[in-house]
Image (tube, rainbow, N blue to C red; front, side, top):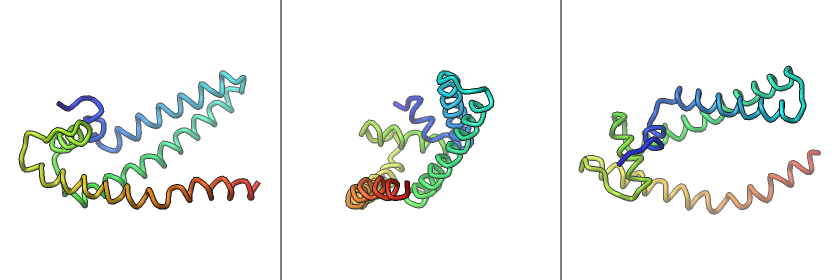
Length: 134
């Protein structure tokens, strides 16, 4: 049974962008105010939250484009059913979604295997590069 997480996963990107921008801007702004920063600094950090939200939305859009290449264009209700099936492990009611869901699972598993190989190197090299740059 789909819930709010599945509907949010299948929502349009503008919904994701607005909720992420609002959440991050509010968080950064409130943290700055709580730390005793000026209102101007707080608003600057809220703007940084909006920029960060835009970057996250771009990454989410790329992920949705990748998913669209794997499963094809689907109506929103089908995407909600597939998100619920992927989260719960139960097959969707529509048998036409079984094939695309299996393709999505296999594609994500292959992506996980690729990531599992190079991600530890990133976790080691990124702090080293940042430290060397400081």
